[in-house]
Image (cartoon, rainbow, N blue to C red; front, side, top):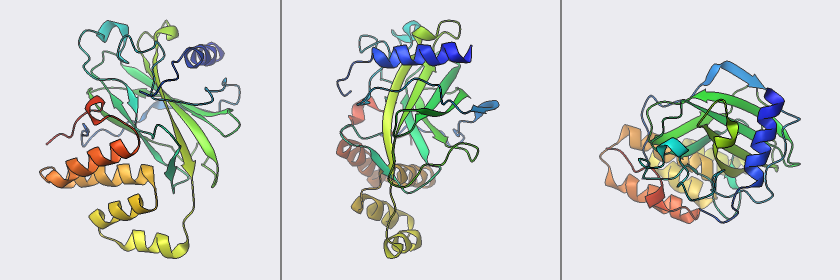
Length: 247
């Protein structure tokens, strides 16, 4: 069954349109692997050469499960830059996906290395949509290597018995390393200043995390919504297609 799922994922990735395609996050929304299931996936077929914010069934359904097409108002979107890989400093980074209203109960995260080889996959329990879903790569997964670019995929499992119905979105991530003085300046900065410093050196994923944490701590601060929309636009993402900031 695992091999069949890998082949279905490959089929979904193969038919994805290649054209490119504020924050709705709940404080308790830390998505956890269902029953702790994780596995190496060296036999997982490779992703497309140029991942974009697209869905497995094309754009006709807006990136929602077939049964949700009439009620979903936004698309399934990986929060990753459109043009180039988003940078991270972490060997175990946190990924973010904007998930529309869906009746899907589970989702699947997959990670591919620079050679397009599948290296990690896990299944999530999915509740409380629409929202921004976050997933931190666990310590039992292969760590990201400095200087390497990875592709990640997030699939809504619309019909567990028919994985061809999955809706899929993909993103890029590249781990980089800063000079010790730069890293020290960032770690010693206060929260808002840290966001500016991350942006200055082009660190995408940590900027996302920092803005999200600030919004949770200061939900009425209007400058955070501005910062969020500016960040999305800088990555080529349309803020109106992403779940909005919740007060």
